[in-house]
Length: 310
Length: 314
Image 1 (cartoon, rainbow over the protein chains, first blue to last red):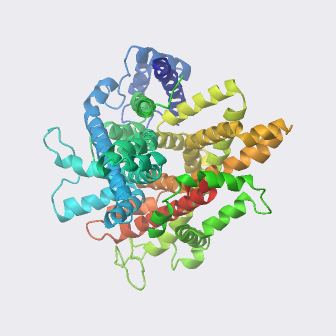
Image 2: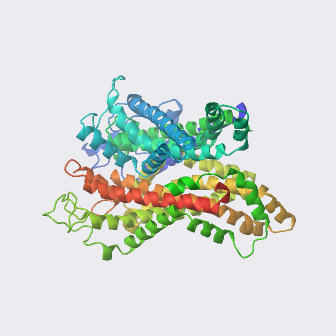
Image 3: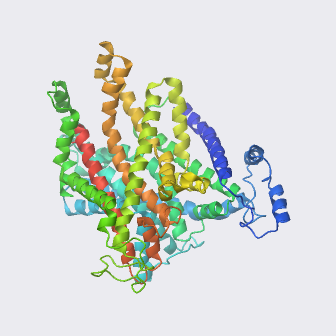
């Protein structure tokens, strides 16, 4: 099985390579470039000089060659917009908010989603059940930017309690984090809650649960040891695609809350045709999605001994 | 909600009786008639279907239903509250929100449905070919889906739009065609995996093995057994895909990449309303509610279809 996962891990390399190729071709199919007239105030000789400096005057294939050569040495290229800064530097500057947001959101979504799902399944048709099914339904039907607007109206405008936009480098300052995390994670939380509830209900009807009850096991250990553990298996499979959704969602949320992360850098990169930065951010995101997917499969095998990869 | 909670409940042990039902020779009642009958008993799903029908009618007959044009400006009524002359109020430019919500349904539905057409075409072909085309085709196609899966979809949508902007394709359906194409081209992965998984497991099932043993041709097995038995989950997946495509499109319009004003779109209306949110929440409230209601309707219909098409989940 270790062999299987090593192969899967290695397989990420050609996947990322294909993505560099597609991205590169797409980027260069876009009309205009970073140093065309209208994009920058520089004079025509200066623009020509810049194009030469960054090899933009050469055929796409040659440019791709230069790029891949740099990439293999860990050099993501120069940042065309700021000129002088490297993309590595920009990523190093911007990764922290994005990663913080990603981790906190994953925790928020899974803790809230699983607790709500377990609560409503164990207390079926009770008030708590209706409340959490209601939350899950409304949460799932609200796009994250609408939720963002509602949160800002409530907490920033009405109660003047949380800052509407921005980010803080201070680890202890939790206030700017709250709304982005809720806005980004609630849809996933709702989804996880629905899934957990359905999966729990299905497990609760299994024969081995009846056996556990007949043995006289107390309800608490039946729920924690038997029901929840088994019910988590299908929930886990859904977390892979959710990670992808979080990644793409963070892009909107960073834009909306003006968080200086990689997602916002990406928007600026696209608008400014900043080829190396577009490429780098796309690669980073693809890597995150691929790794998330792989770890879910790995976790899946750990939780469910019936699953064997070969 | 009560309906749904009651419905999703006891089921698991019905496995054996469902098998017994299948074993009986079906007399004039196909799977689909049965499914339709089950669906008709699900009130939430019916409600969803009714709302979807209403939205579709509103979108089709928008010029007749909307009191004003989506772009007509009432200069004396900037961000007016809902009133008798402007049921949903007006926006920052003084346009009637009610009319714009109705016209906006056109974009949302068109995106939701056309994207699913693209996803259906690519997803079923790729998934089917992977399942039935032999080991090498399977490996190749699954690797392809890995690449598309890892490609951040929103980023692809934005890039494709930029690539095609200025070409003739960019102007089809008022610029929406590019949005369909882009969302569809990255959205088929899950469906392809679903179709492949479904067909692979069906091929091992006794009734398919029996058909093979009886000398059925490959084409017949595919068209009589594999395809119809795959269609249930496919329809369910597409139904859930509609609202998610609508969300993606609204998000694009919200960040200013999709449909632009003065054209009416729920996403850009929300963005537009955000500019005046401190003065009045109404310009955001109505398009957001329209999005949520559309989403829920498809969700309810999807839940209902899933339960109706797969009796084992009941």
